[in-house]
Length: 179
Image 1 (tube, one colour):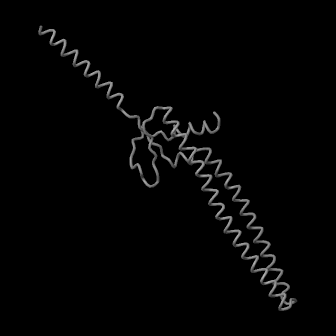
Image 2 (tube, one colour):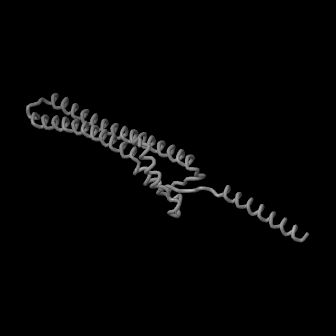
Image 3 (cartoon, helix red, strand yellow):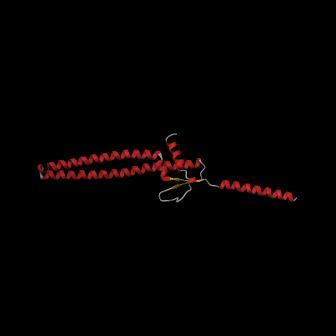
């Protein structure tokens, strides 16, 4: 009888221990973090976006430079002809130069605003791509939580063992480049 009690207690102990082990395994969360800034700037889609934006910026700057040169030429022409112009003609030319200068300043300001808007729009698109990829990656790889470090310090420390930044950079670039 004593033997049966011991066997029963041992069996209950084994079952409880096994149950606790299974519970512990199931309740262990798979958590990792990503260095967000490193991920975004290493993403080939971001690099491509930056190149496209630089090309657009060069075009806008070239247009502004052309307008500046045209304005400068108008000023030079006016200065060379000033002695030959009547008071009325001077006033007309000065008014035209003033309008040309204002148009140039307005165009430059509009291009600056447009550049900022386009850059923000492109960046938002890249961030949406990265966030969607990380979410999908987390689901496919059974992560319960993937945190992102930021410059503002939302994560002050993370063990390098759970840093999956390079893993995600490789995966997102392979996905982006169709590999």
